[in-house]
Image 1 (cartoon, helix red, strand yellow):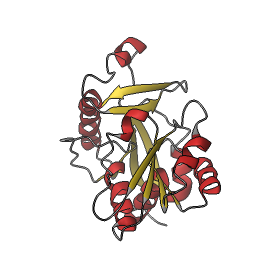
Image 2 (cartoon, helix red, strand yellow):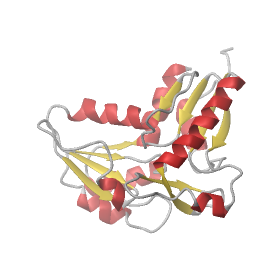
Image 3 (cartoon, one colour):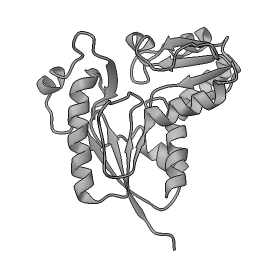
Image 4 (cartoon, helix red, strand yellow):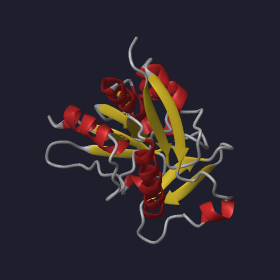
Length: 221
């Protein structure tokens, strides 16, 4: 029988994430003993409000355990995320998976760590370096100028926004990206059902962040 590995799924919101982790585990397959942790675990609404983005700070979006969407600043979440990673290092888990496609400069783990943002962006680069245009779907309008994927001499990058947690802008956003050769749903909150909807509207290949990350995790077990 294959060895079971303890994998920590770390969200920038509150854990557990029944809207995300079970779907990922279905793709990852057997051999996983999952544990979950969240950067906002144990905080009340006032403390969470204090983590809102400051001037010039990148925006992050997450889901609380009651399903409510909140917008957070990157710096405060990076500090809390580092505390979680330090704790997980001490617990001796096999693998840490950061469930956010935002980049957290300076955040480190002694445990092998899958950073969703790096995995997704490198996958997009591998598919677009030959000059293909990429449509990038992000949750917030502000993130359209903050995401690291940009047009350059090799590719054209188009942006649109639709939250995975509130509203119903997904179809409109998909139509705005239909001219791209490839669409990437650049948030771990987007589901496979959402990916299928975007693919049906655009008629283009659609890359789902959580599926790309799950596939990477499966190879490491």
